Length: 432
Image (cartoon, rainbow, N blue to C red):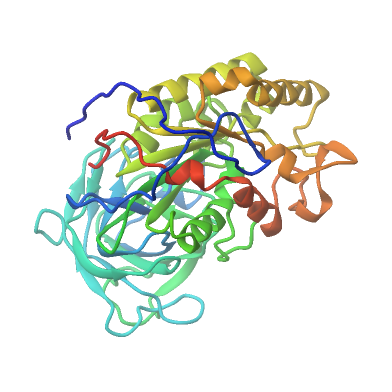
């Protein structure tokens, strides 16, 4: 894997008028980004890997089972490749037969007729992923639609040990009875439902106008907690649909690298829920910079740092965000940062945490933020109750006074100015 470091180039052109939810100096964009003529890859789906929970299926791992997972695309392509991670494993991960397909109708979908394709790794039908590593499959010719589900099935022939997984998928996935069922045309063997993804962390595409990747790095708000199960109603899903509908944004993929309970500064292993994952500042390289074709990162994180013990200060959260922005700019990735949304009456709310949230948001809204971030999106202003700004508006409340419902997540997506995502970056190399 090669990487060239480029100096950050100055934005060209005059400022353009953007949405009232955008703060800071907008960049000018002369034209939509062009497809990569050299055949680079775009991320169409992604998720952040995390350690196993203290108990349950992730701790026990899987042995001679096939996992059939449903993932939702953002950008279209003419071929795809899959990413599997053993980032948090304790033993080498054996991957058996692996397939990809379009799903048929209904729950627990079977592959649609004629769409099942085998997936290989270095020309072989099986692979082993070392502890701490990720593997990328060979390219698979496949007509990948935008805004559609895919079925990825992988047989795990040997005991995996504690699984590298993503615990809050907001998506029903399926585990089989013993045996290799990756190529099954039906769903009869898939008798166990789980709302988590296992080992699979990415689907990349190229061709058909794929133009690069936007990555959202965040916590449970980005994960889409309280959105409709199997509804693809996370704010990143809504953002991807906006991009696909916009000629200037069509071809950009959106990767959701949110993790429930994640913090900027501390790991989940410092709490009773290690599945909250590696601190955002430490997973930035793996979950953002090392994704394919990255043009823009959206940083929307910090509330857990303020409300979970040991609590961070507003200054520490801001320093963490600025540090991540500097690292991204070194790779010539644009950085959009979001203000923190209200959480009054949620389980971890305290007046002290609210005061710190207000301080973070005030700093992000200030003219000084323009020196650190390419744009600031005021998510707080988009969803707060104007009669009580410390609360989420009732129409957007997912029920626990911190997470949003589908309408609330759509509102976050609508607050993001697409012009800040579609501008062409300088010619830094992000394709892996």
